[in-house]
Image (tube, rainbow, N blue to C red):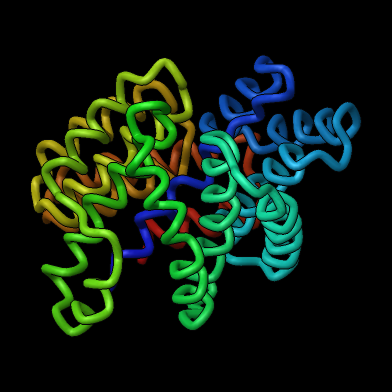
Length: 289
């Protein structure tokens, strides 16, 4: 079940602030995708000031602290804040009797935030609980995937990874047979469609997801490189994605390209004014291990 949690690890960036100005939402995700965490915090502060205590503001707050938790090397202070705002979001959303497409996307986003931080903390009991609690929402996403690109993205990831887990980890097959069935080819098809979405966050998330799938699961580094280059040409300062690309090249023993990528990252770390010392240390350790 090594990669099964990745079904929703990447969804947490994709929540949408439907009832708040789209320009604020777009600016936040553009900042975060660009690796500009100070700008992301600035926009988040504006959201808290103008739209205090709304579900959407709590959700994007959880999003921000989850990103900080990952890039700080799993600092406990960010874990606590992420958990707080994600749980507040879930508690409010689950009071809705008949959630619509947007509410379901938000519930999945909030639950996937909890899943992500528990995977990073290696709290696998919580990972299992988080995964189990989200299954019914995956079912909803698959039924309504044609109505929303955000749901199509979620459906595509689920369909691909549930079947991958069944194939790669037969020991857990008896558990997975109780989950909704998937289809790897259909999952990839949906993800590729999402790369052309008019919603920028959906397009970005599906692109990086395909880059990860092709090097981790499909064992196709050339296709993986295509998607990495596509997303990094747009967001060259996203160090999470840059270091992931380095790991992909290193895994396939592409020594010359990996060394070139490492030097690029080192140069960015030495000149990047968006990262604090803790974050720079975290990314430096990735490329030097």
